[in-house]
Length: 396
Image (cartoon, rainbow, N blue to C red):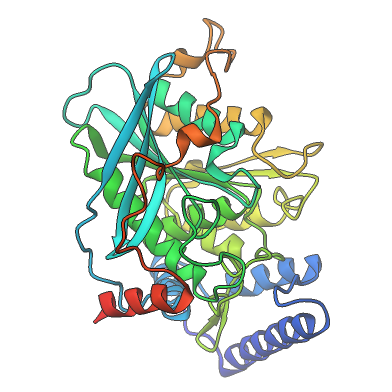
């Protein structure tokens, strides 16, 4: 149905007002604006008026997808150069193994992480593949709560790759995570290449690819899912909010939400997963506290338009705070077991009560990709300018 000129002009005015609120907020508080909760909810109501059927939603999603790439500096996407991956220091655990990994997402620009695999031998497409980006915790991917979810998912029948935020720990210090204005571009490209790495294993079934992370890792979860349709199942934890986009250049320090072509927020970007299965894990103790009544209903509307209303769920924990503790891991295990065809029985009893008693944490130094035996290669680029030059060269 064609909209009247009045409706179009009214929505344009709303967009300008929303942008003005963001600009004023950023000038008075910080470089990473947090708009009022009520404004975030009203924004979703206005976004919903821009489409009424599948074709209109897909056109809007396409516009947002293009805006994310353009605003982050990833248009055009870089060439997919050889990963030159190195996998070493295998450690056999209870039902899974852990290995240290590094590869090049761009020539001289390294992704570092850990590969978790089931101990049982796999054949073609016998395992699911799961990416596990982490949030802004001090320990990053070496935190016990990151290790344990990777271990559990591996025991259940996934090959899992947990990888570092750009510039976060001693493995990945080619640029400064907090200061580099291009860190969102680097990190998003690293996520795409991490998916390339995961799919390079013949045992990984490309029809069963999942992503889950918390906080900043939640941002990477729904951003990657929105940009790359190879992701089949997503579970962003404590991040998909209509009124807060994060406090870092890797999340909200680039012009991807508010552009002249559109206005959007993380709740809508998360909904761009539709019709692929999406689990929103939210809590009462952070900016996802309104998810059951604001962000989740919006996602339900999108999924209904896309003909898959049963593929989106919200697990809300009103008494919980920000994090990825056991209470939040349990619903993710069950959701991934259902949609990635994993064996929940590998981490549960006959009554499907989940236990992580099998897990034994490793020390951070045991998980580092670079060490005395595997030093960082001499051709690694260093510093923000050199990293950006590597990106731009790969875009030519």
